[in-house]
Length: 82
Image (cartoon, rainbow, N blue to C red; front, top):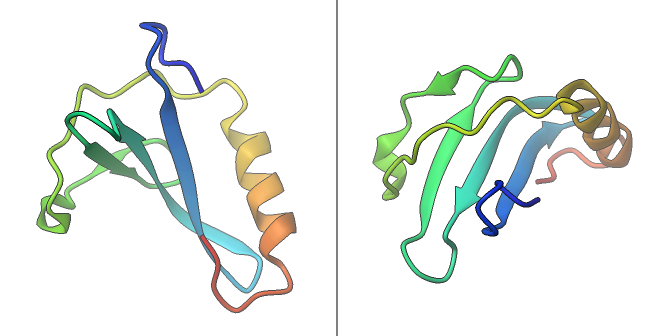
């Protein structure tokens, strides 16, 4: 999804047995790869030990609840999926 500057943001949901628990957003994947990890209420989590720097938090997606619902539906037949 375009972040407004022409760069793409990559949203990934971590799901267990059809339930989303958190998500991360990757930025600048091919230049200066950075990652933010969020809870499902769009609160930035302190996960710097993953080896990535944070970047300025983008606005909460307007359709975040729909994204969570879709990730949960798609993952319901798996014990773990991202």
